Image 1 (cartoon, rainbow, N blue to C red):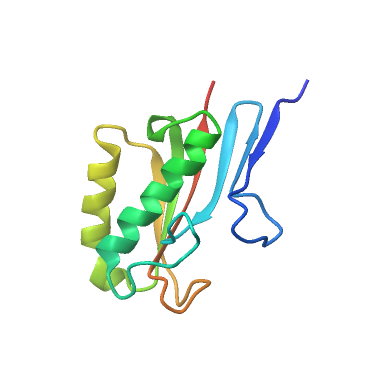
Image 2 (cartoon, rainbow, N blue to C red):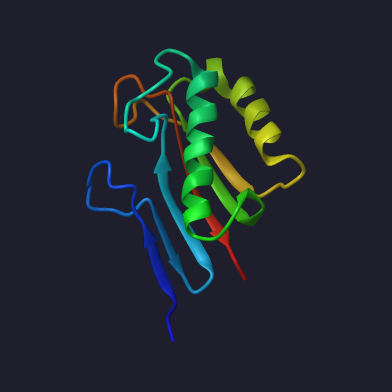
Length: 127
């Protein structure tokens, strides 16, 4: 028997769920720096964008009955890795505390929105 649950924040519809949980594995779509109303925040500020993106990741995990301690794999996409890697890694380690999932940090030319500097997607487990 399959145990499937999805989470959508209903801010917009891109044809995907923000989170998809199937049989104890949670797939989190790329999160970025928007508040609960869908307004982008932190233009030109990687620290603000990173913190908000991690809050959004937490929100999706919570809706699917998980926390950051359930993270198994994380992908961080940066538009300017040369300038932002160190600060993002420090903020990410602060966020995780002692938990250490597998993951990748990937430099990209651009993301969905011109002001977007970071995006984070993840896989978590509940079993």
